[in-house]
Length: 354
Image (cartoon, rainbow, N blue to C red; front, side, top):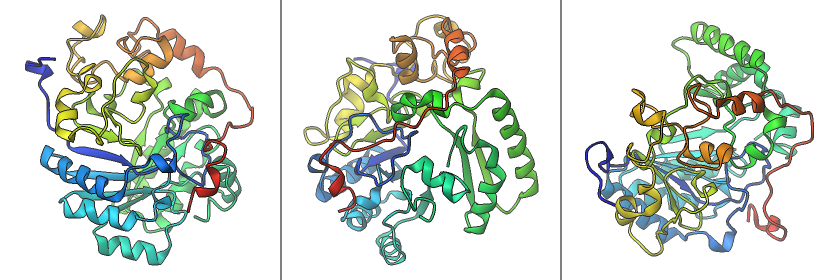
């Protein structure tokens, strides 16, 4: 596919390395796919080291070591060392389950630059319930069950010595889409949360940076998903597939190339999946003539597909989208049903943290 002008291929800046889909937690908002990769299909240490070198050559500056729970990998220290050797800034995204003080020290010595810990709630009982794992708290996604305790979560972050906290509302992909009605906050809760964040930023100015992400279903415009499809970031799954974003496999009909078979540079430039929605030439109205088309790039392709069945449709979150009323109706659907917890397939549970 020939690209020019606004469709030119930019250099990626960030790589999300999903080292494993294994995780002891069962968070019902997890953005991992419903079909999780098995341990035996995971890339080995040497392959990840090659991927990191190729990423750095491609222009990537930072790598996010994620999962699943990356602590489930016995070779996490070696994987981290490989990323550091490639010259990448390394960020570990973890629940902290399986990350002991000794192991954290080894990771620091291997070159780990930053740690991002996910906390389900400030209340231990609620946190364990949300994670589907007893003891998860002792080890932040925001949704209906914890949205009214934002102040307490910020206090917890301060007590732990964090320099930054992200109040990230659930984005409805993967397992979160399956649990949408059980997780969806009301508009009143979202408004209270926004007001609380403003007050907390003022109160703790200079002590901690507070980032906040508005839930899509209550936004006026869609977010520029991953900074534009195939524009600034890429994702490598545990089994080696390379995706434009972490939820891209939910769009049927796309062809994803694998690092076992091709170089990262070849995939970035030539993969059919990456070129499918690059730039703006693929857009339909109202996006095609919208002055925001190179600001939000039509919104999220995965969300458009999930809600309309057409990955090229305007993200229904946008108030100008033909399907916007569907988002309003879905936001109003809230239930108190039990969570459908994220779990590995039968027979895989025993090796989760092995």
